[in-house]
Structure formats: structure tokens, C-alpha cells
Length: 133
Image 1: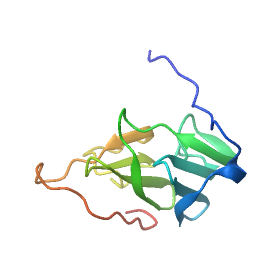
Image 2 (image 1 turned 45 degrees about the vertical axis):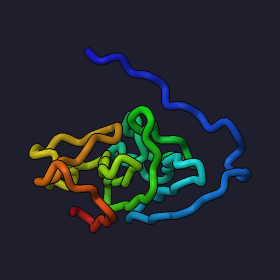
Image 3 (image 1 turned 60 degrees about the vertical axis):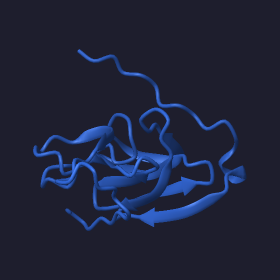
Image 4 (image 1 turned 90 degrees about the vertical axis):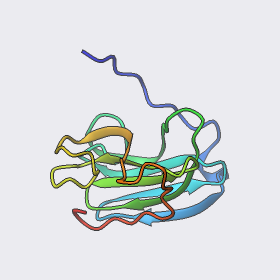
């Protein structure tokens, strides 16, 4: 069984964070902070805000990205979140019942996972989410 690690906390109060972009899903929101951090809050039934599923995340929380990566852009769907990172990759988390995360299966993710694109040498330049896609 995998060890569950606590989500990191923000080092400064949310009121002091400069936000570059905000995305709103059906019942959750996400933001890219000036330092490239990914923040999420709101409904978290499918772990679209990271970590274990719960009913709600009441204030912005830091979503850990893979080491040495920073978020450039974020999109939010009904129950999933997709982040565009500095390596040119798109990383998704949350609901995947309809293949929203592009993983080739229907398993939801509680941490950002790389979305494989057909041309592995291509960089993703923008992300967008619909309700279930």
C-alpha cells in the first residue's frame, strides 16, 4: 500500500500571493501563482484539488507538481484540473471516468500525472477543459 504524504502548506498567507491566472471549473477553482505554484480550492470529491477526496477545500492549497516543474497555465473542468508546466507537458488530476486525463484508463488521479501526447517531442502550448473532456 502506498504511503500517504501530507500536502505541503503555503509558506505565506494566501493574501500575500500574486496570482497570474485563475481558472474556474463547475465547483472548484485553480490558480497559477507568480512563482509557478499551482493552487486549488473548492469541491474536491474527485481529488481535482489534489490529495485525498473530500467534500470541499475551503481555501487555496498548494498542489505538489513533479520536482523542478512550475505551472504556466491551468484549466478546470467539472471534476478535473489540468496544468501546463515549464517542461512543455500537461499534467492532470481528478476525475477520469470519461478519459479526461488522457491516461488511457478511467482511474482518477489525486496528484498531477503527465498526459501523454502522440508526438512525444511536441510541447503543449495551451490547455483547456470542458465539463467531462
